[in-house]
Image (cartoon, rainbow, N blue to C red):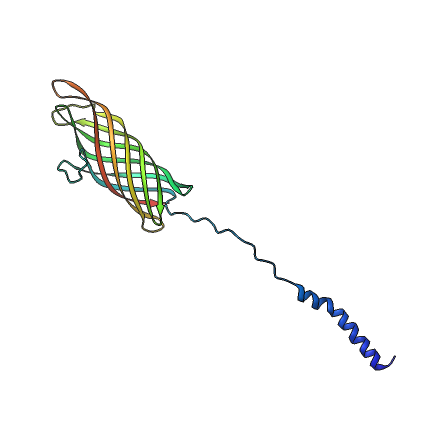
Length: 210
């Protein structure tokens, strides 16, 4: 075998040996990127919270009526998201500032209130619009020309509110509550009566989310 033939044979052998490598390089494809569903984002109103509130309480719905009383208190609760709606529960204590309520022949005063409320609403960006309803226990005392039960009476609460996120932890709210207490016994010095009494509360508050 001549030197030229040997050289040609060696070159041919090298070409054949490298052909699979070149073919592999030509046919290799990058694997398709796997699809990852984006994580669900929270509305910013879920989780546990606690806060304070203050406002006005009155037997009349007009917040500018002359018989309104300053009130204030604390609240705490928990919200979760279900099907795009925000639902939760809240416990609240309020000092009503001796809100006067009328009974036959006189007045009684409301001093303290405990409330357990359910909440449901819809978040629109950083704003939550919600409704609330629940049970309320109100302490009543003797008032003008009338003696009352001097104790706690059960009732119900209905309300609406708007809450606005200020940052990741703080939010501010405005809420209206209507509270009805049925069958309140009173004595006006002449006769005894059972009366359904009610009041209206307009309050603002701040919540801190944990």
